[in-house]
Image (cartoon, rainbow, N blue to C red; front, side, top):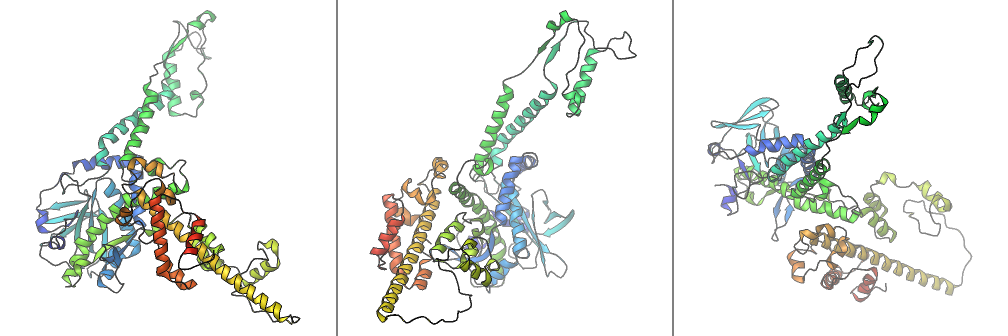
Length: 587
């Protein structure tokens, strides 16, 4: 009995090959050969497969466990499960290649094999491969895999034999078909007939292109028409048909030659010129074939599990729409396939190894994926600039978010030059970061009246308080803006935004989607729309010295009110919110 069966869960689309499973009736994979042919011959299929491949390779694998809410949290690096996951495919670089290899397999045939075997007789290092079903074949009580042109035997272990980390392992990973769980399914499988049509249309368009070069119709010439003779021919007549064929053949083989462009010269009596005519056989199908091909490509793009614009191009979609497209593609297309691979590594590799080592929490550990490297927001640098201007983040944070390093920071000499030279790009009236500057020698100043000194000190205190209030105001406004954008991104992939409206929704900034697609208060909690929205508040509270819980409650209440009223957030509302909240800022 497998770990999942003991826990009462559904059987995953992954299976480690054992002696019993070697005797299992094979599934029908005859369609997969056709699918691979389209991968080789149709660029749209190859592009879709490679897009998944490149996207999956940027995810990170880690060992985790689920908390009470069902979220996956990472395990400490010292945990045995974390050590095993870190060793998969030799580390991060090998894991990226492992995930990259799965892209074409899960998109085209819908399945692949993971083969793990010792690299040498000592078994100190393991060789991880992702192979197609054409490279792995059962033979008797063993499995034969073709690796680097050689046949490698993977013996079928007994079902009750504990898995050892040095044992060769063969794991079949597949996207199961809903009609028969053992069969593989893929986006290409459902598009095979459509791709056959596309192949015919490609051939038709190619024939049209060739006909434009060689088949421009039939030329009717009067009987007796001849070509001009060349020296030595005397009174011999040229063979008209032969010359025409020769010129046409030359033009086809050498499109850059004169035969392809220079007209053929005929010597005919003047009264016969009007009798020379050309018949053409043009068809409406010429333009129709190109139109039908574009329609077939669009239908194939719509059949993928990612937005069709990924394959067809994003056209005039603005940067908000492009970001939303990418997020939807990751959520609906990439992550499910990463989940398939992660589940296979969990149930067929990690958990059996931990069980063999008698680890108490073996069945609670799992291999999981992190897609945050795929979710870099295009407007993060712009937000960082604005928040830095308000004084809410450091120079180092600004450099990090805009792609620079501390090595790019200005030197003390550059800071000094900018203070003295306004043309250097710095306003001398603005404050300058002098944290690394040498302290200046105090200079003697004439004594001032004590009353003036007191007034100046009071004004300085007021200025500091006002600056603190403006800083907190800008930081909180940025947090609210990001929270409403996060809400919109989640709404876009929920039933509140029907799939037929996805195209229109990409033209709307994420922070305003709740104003177009209504969401009830119950759905806010059901869909976890505000989960993680206020994670930065405790850090801000510690930095600026205010009560975090009070502000979190105020922000959460405000965000829910915006969603319920279908209203946009504004900077003025942030000012009113902070004046009326427990912070009591006179913003």
